[in-house]
Length: 78
Image 1 (tube, rainbow, N blue to C red):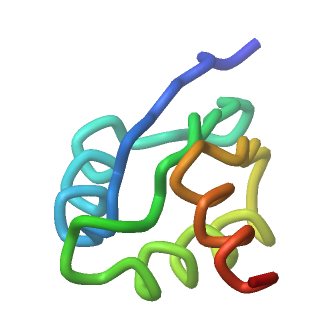
Image 2: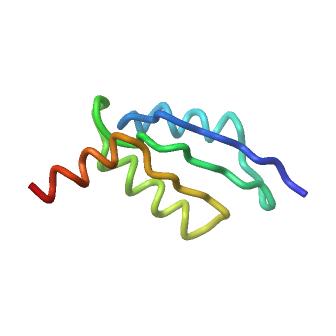
Image 3: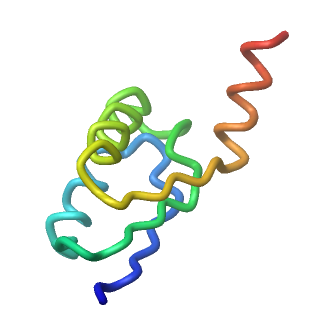
């Protein structure tokens, strides 16, 4: 059985996320749980979302919606 890795509060910082993933080096069998708050505040929210969606296609990545994603979703409805 692999590791369970949790990452949270990326806040649009794609380069920091990539550095962290490179440092942790998730392997086949690992489960990575993203704890939300992928967007807002940082310079590249769109890039973070695209990176996570691509990663989700290739691995056991679990995406949990955070309060910042909830706020953005609600904003699209108003």
